[in-house]
Image (cartoon, rainbow, N blue to C red; front, side, top):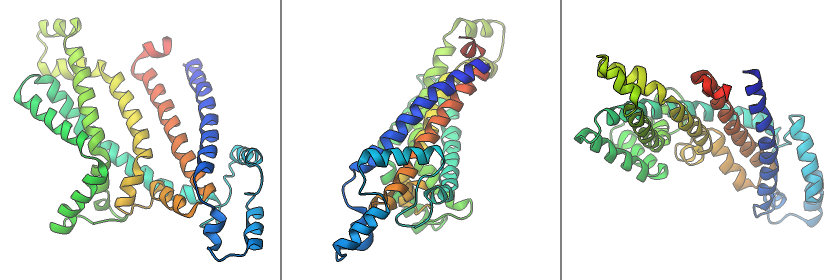
Length: 306
């Protein structure tokens, strides 16, 4: 088991280095001058040059990359141009909100997708299966930038049941979590249906039925348990997708998380803050995938033995 974990960690390190490099290069491709953005159009050339020198933006890109890489290794992501605070502090102040929203959206996704997928697999070819298929197609077809405003209009403006935007109590989480998790719930439903149907056609399931086990015991104790590996895979990937996909949802609902911070950083040409946000999202994605691999080893011992 220790060897399996060590190998997974070794594979994750090159991915993290590649992410750091791509984040640095991609951010510097973004058009616009952050110094001009900070001082305004009427700033003098001397003031622009002094601030550019103070922010090390007059150095060659290779030198800036060396400073950035050294800072990342020491946990120093620089100082935000906009907030005039360390990027690490700004990002970590907003990260809990994004993590909270992503976790609740994942729970919504699992609460809808797993039961619906099991029901569709159990009643394959029936009207129930077809109805679930229609709803999954609808969930996949409606993007979150369209679903979010519709939910706000119905449940906040017309009915007045839920808050329109912002972060507060549990009621503030309902609409953003549904908006973020709806499409992923449709994907999970199809994955669960396909995986469980494959297991239900296996020999061991026919043997279990021949022994007189009830249909629910066959479904949950045998078919669903053996179908967990692909289901865990899609859940792990979806959690990473949720972290990266909060940009639109957080902007719609004015949720004070990393996604909204990315939009603000792009508007202000805040290179260090944008790099910090993207880096945190990417690292979180890698860590979630690593954790998913480790869960595999506990769910299915064959994974770690291989």
